[in-house]
Image (cartoon, rainbow, N blue to C red; front, side, top):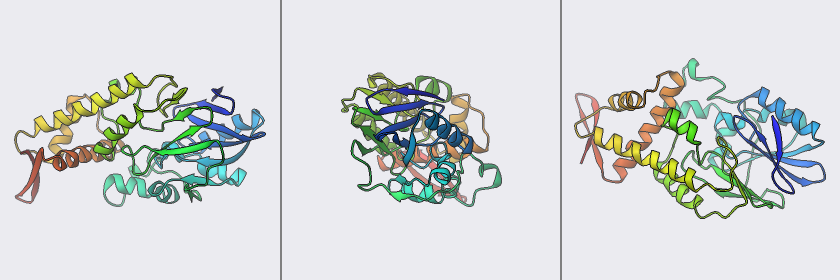
Length: 290
């Protein structure tokens, strides 16, 4: 992991999931997210310690496994507190909730893996517990109560509110829990005035306008594809297969639950926006344009 200084007190570790660091006092730092597993946690600790820092606390932007995977090992070795927001607090404390939620029942063993199921850690609700120089803001949409973090250096850590051009061009469909809130968050991001923006899965940049537009256009594209496909009655499984085929994606257990949950969220959005409706026939649920 490469430690990059981007402000007087602000750093980040370039990683598959970018990790934030903020120096709250001499040699004491707060970590923003901890990567996807125990090994990521060990690497974070090694890099932090080699830089002469001591971990004072952890902030989790949200509870997806690739953001909390290093929590347990770092907490065990430093006895530091971990802070998360509302529902994210619950999912981080009880990680079995993530694959259970995604699957809609008890998760079968193939989705009880490190990509969807992190190790548990002891978490405190974030409330007003952040030290001077750090503040959090809501970034709902991708997950239940996801947050971003702003530092005193006017650096914004944006969690999973924006995905890179490479990710979008390769996968097209990225996980969204609430489509309407995600679109609202994209509008909110366009109002931020920062020196630097660091999404979790994209390069740090001082201009996010094109990335906001890219993410928004892809969401609107998928909304339209699902709506147009439902010109005749379609089951959820037919819609899911259509999206996989349309974007040349390969089905596996992880993708089935992640993209499947996301497509259900798109259907909920279209239904709430009075674009589609549903009907039960022969004990099957069908979706169709209004």
